[in-house]
Every structure is written in C-alpha cells, then in structure tokens.
Image (cartoon, rainbow, N blue to C red):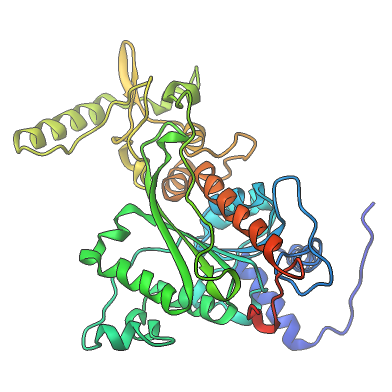
Length: 399
C-alpha cells in the first residue's frame, strides 16, 4: 500500500507555482507533485558520464550510461532511441498538448510546454542535448557574415526571433558535451542553403565539431523517409577530431510494407466512393499538366512514400490497395509500425492526432543507429581520459 505524505504550511509562492504548472500539464495537484518528486528522484538514480566523480561510471549492458534532454520532443522518437543505448532523460519539452498526452502515456512524464517560456535554470545539466527543432527562415539582412557568424555569441544576430535561437541559447548556456539534432532533408537547401549555413556556423562558433548526414529510413522501416541528422561534439571535451561516423545501413532482407499491415483492418479506413473518385480525378488533372501530384498506391512488397503530418486529411500519399474494393488508409497502429514505434506503446489520441504525431515523428530505429555511434565516441572518450572520466564543472561547463 502506498505510504501517505502530508506537507503543511507550503509557502504561497510555491503553492501558486504548483497550481500554475499542474493546470498547464492537465494534472491534479497530487499527480503533479508526485511527478516532480519522481523527476527529482530519477535524476539521481544513475551516474552520468560527465558528472564530477571520483570513479568512472559503470558501463550499462547497452553502452556507456549518460543523461540527455529531449527538446521539441514530439512523441519521443529521439528519447526512445537514446534510452535503448543507455541514456536517461532528465528533462523534456514539447508544446503540443496532444503530443504531451502521448508522451505522458509512453514515458510517464508530461514535457514542459513552450520552449520560449522555459527557464534555462530549470534544465538539469546533461550529457546529450537531443532536439527535433523546426526549420524556420533566418534573417541576416544588414549583418555581415563575418560579424554574425565569426565571433562568440554571433548566433544572436543571425537567429533572433526563431526557435533555433532559443535552442542555441540553451546550448550556449548549458554546454552539453554532445548534440543530437534532427530535421527535414530540405534544411540543407532551405532559403538557398542559408538556413543550413546559419545552423552549422552557429554550432561551430560555439566550439562544436559538427557532423551532418541525410539518412533514408527505408533501410530500417518500409518507408522512404529522408531526414538530416546533425551530431555535434564539444571540442573542449572531445578534441578537434572525435572518431564519429554515421551508421552504415543494415544489410540483408529489407523491410516490406506487408510485414506491418493488419490482416483485418476496420472497414472505416476504406475510402468512400466519393473520396476515391475525387483523388483519381485530381491525379488525372495534374498528369495532364505534366506534374506528378496525386495519390500513391503502395507496393505491398516494397516501401511507401513518406508519411506526412497531413495524412489524416485523405491518406492520399500512402493508400493500401484492396482486391475488389476501394483502397484504404493505413490504420493509426499501422502508421505507428511504419515509423518503427513498437506495438506495446498504446495509441491514446484520436486518429487525426495520431496521424499528425507519427507524420512529424523521428524514426526511432534510425535515431538508435546514430545514437550507437555516439555511444561509441563516449566510450572512446572515457577510455582516453587520464582519470577515466570526463569532468563537468558547475553550470554545465565541460573541463
């Protein structure tokens, strides 16, 4: 039986803070207080690779243990990957209320909300900062490249007003030894390459060795999904040339769409005659114009197009052919499998929200493959350090 704990004479400012936070998190007072206590307890549960310590941290079965924060978390694709290689989350942040609901069901905690309102002091020190940050245009009008990118804290000139500015501010203040960032493939070409130049140069200005590569998830799941992964290592910890390499795609039998499909999906996912006729007419109209817009009937023995956040509208980019009747959408559970999230994680939101969440998510298997390569560098650093450990001073400054 759970033991009771009664706390009297709570200071008014603490009481107001609890009330404000629990309302934002949609929790009862009891649930919120317990979540805060659990977070404090778990933050001390395991050693961190970069905590000040007298002895090296023990090696976990899946690699070197480390702590991480999960920013722009979505439904936790990066978190799931990092936990699989020995990581422990100490902070998460996601503004979308429905994604927060899924995150709570899957990981037992409600992420903080708008990153622009997060106090940096509330973010615990960590070894890896993970973030699937949004791609936004940057304005550097009137500011020379040398001035905006060639001096410390130059990111403030180039990124002011963007969400990347808030991410860069957190990185600059907390100095995480490792960065793991993910974004759409077009980040590299967005704004004629200017967006990527600002991101890369900003991280390099803050003394990170930056690695970036576009990876297609089709080697891990039956979906053609190209995303850019950005990994950064603090040079003051790892030196100028840490031995990091992006993962080689797995060999052998490639995943097939048919492997993740339900044998008896509910009839409601079959397209109505009206919608099916509209999609065929729409596709024909665009073919006559010489472009390729239109629905996509999936190859059951192959991989699908990219699952997008708009899939809930008509499902047109990935339609499952059915013998003797109209094609159908993927079910939310199939969309979950297509992204590589395991079945034991329940769908706890509406179909519309589930499609949005999976369409915006990171494929955990791809992120895990990248995380394993990061873990190898952590182990390398631990082995080469004279005291068998990397120390991290106060305020997150590596030394």
